[in-house]
Image (tube, rainbow, N blue to C red; front, side, top):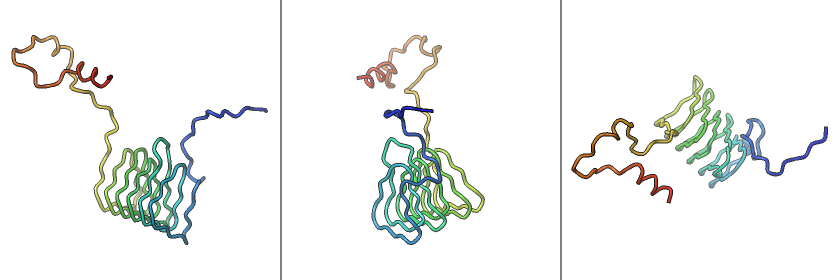
Length: 162
């Protein structure tokens, strides 16, 4: 019944439907926007839209919404139109009749029938890559007399560790 609020609570991913900032259909903004949390755009924005780093921000562009500029937000749900490159690090959801005229850089893409992209779709590689990894059986072979041109994995790791 009684509870204490944790002041060190980690902010959860935003839920669609609860906007921190709302740009209505009768609003026109010229200039860049930087935000955190949830931004809902149903008006016109002429400028780039960017989410602050380190959070799971969400941009929703309504059916009347139009953005002309670069978009760099972790999560985007699009019902309207974007003219410019779109960069999402988490999730891009293109609803029916949504339009993008520009390149799309995504990790996870959901596209409904009727949505269109006039540009390139570029999947971001989120997997971590190993540095010059060799299987154990190749490491046990006798080294050649010629100096190796490839850097040693242990040397690279120690250089990264400082």
